Length: 88
Image (tube, rainbow, N blue to C red; front, side, top):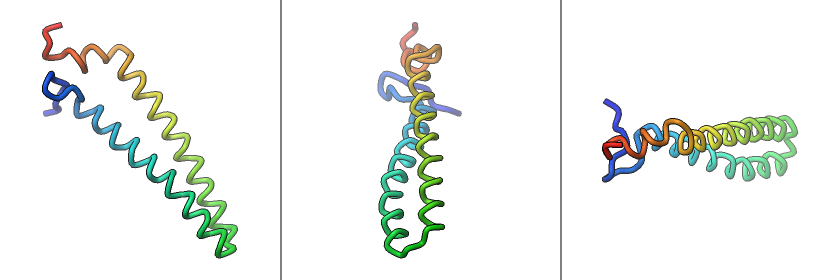
């Protein structure tokens, strides 16, 4: 059963999941910089292009996740996530 936000833990399981995904994607974006340098050092244009495409796609996903989380925190689900056990 999914855990909802409580006073003891103000972050629901679902919000925690999104935070974890966002962190993972952000770390990946940082790593692509190193991978691009490695590919450039090896003069592998095909690898450079693929890493850049992956970086662009993940950047778009990070932006989409960020926007979705913003809606979750400030949208209709906000009161349920924060005040579920608050009696409100």
